[in-house]
Length: 130
Image 1 (cartoon, rainbow, N blue to C red):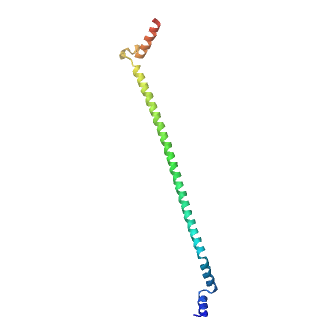
Image 2: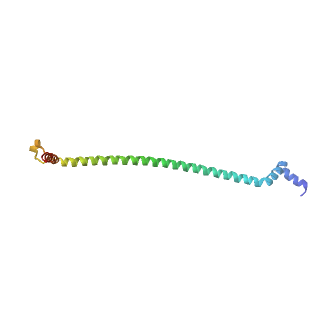
Image 3: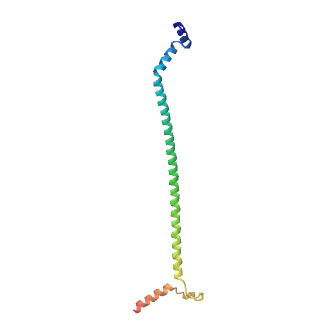
């Protein structure tokens, strides 16, 4: 192959531009590879950032849901405590009513003497006499 043959082949491939492209490729192929690697790394970092943001958002949503559940739990607990207090008050009133029951038959309700008052009256009489 002579020089004319080489020039004909190069001319067929695009002439001076083909030579320029070949030289540029041969000189810059490592630089281009580094640029492509950097671009790929950048895309991977961006994907990781997006994934972290998504996970943080999910955690925030779950925290809000847990907070709402705790508020509901505390409300239920306070409601339960209120019912317990009411129940205890009613039990105390029942005990007081049992203690103040009338020992006389129904026909003598006008002269009702509850046991507690009898004790109080006896104590007052003993203090007066004593």
